Length: 346
Image (cartoon, rainbow, N blue to C red; front, side):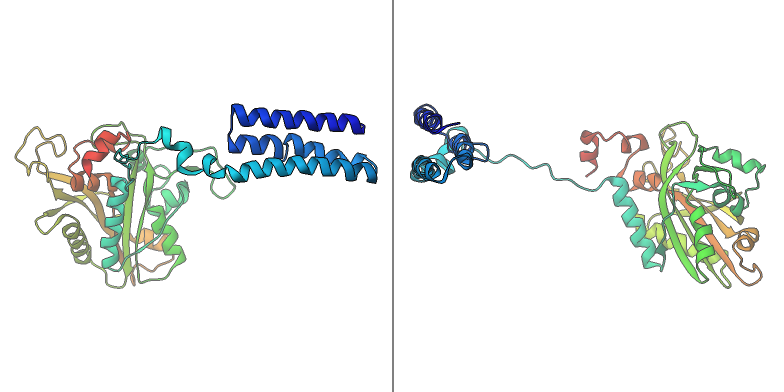
């Protein structure tokens, strides 16, 4: 590019600037088109390095004159381009503001937080564990031998993960493996709860799902008895549901406790008066927890002498507690993420 071509291009840029001011006097558009990093005048001024010092002095003065002209125009008209005047035609300040959709915690999260707070009052701490668990921690250490029929009650999902020490990995069927991990990690006395997701191959209905949330709790020390378990669960249930909540124990079998018990809570929906109640089936009671004294074999697997130490353990589905707290008669609504339903809960 020679001097005459450069001056000719400068003249065309000035013509386009004048035209832009008349046709579309937009501040951002004018600035970017002529003075931005890729603006026409900016790119032309960069070419001054191709000329001799004398030509550069002449052409630089001409180019800066046009640059100052554009800057002066933008400075003089900045109030016209910016602020309220520019956008006043598409905003009606007399209209009320739009309602904000404020977020809130999911009912399951609210329930979990309340459960944790309740057990923390009783001196329990919280431990978390992996969702993909070794067969040893999930079954064998909890007194589920490989061919034990009780495994059929927790038919689950196995993975392709394998190693030399433990060939089988699975999606955990309960949070009880955290009990084993904690007992191997810490020394008594210990009070621990372990919440989290668990997985079982079950049909989905109003009270069951193949993936749900569970909380496991246990207490290990010297001279721990069944009366300690009963007092702990009664204190927890009454703190969660109020002093009117009733609790009853009935014998049950779990491989990792001996003796074992099924803990039921009175139905808050019908009080046992509705034979067609979808939740309690007219019984007036809901099976909420499995509990019992930790089996001596489990204590031995964790290196504890069952003649010295004893303990209790319990487990429950958090969804069941959520249904009672929020008056939900079908747990499937908790997973559908339907805002029309979730808003009614609050």
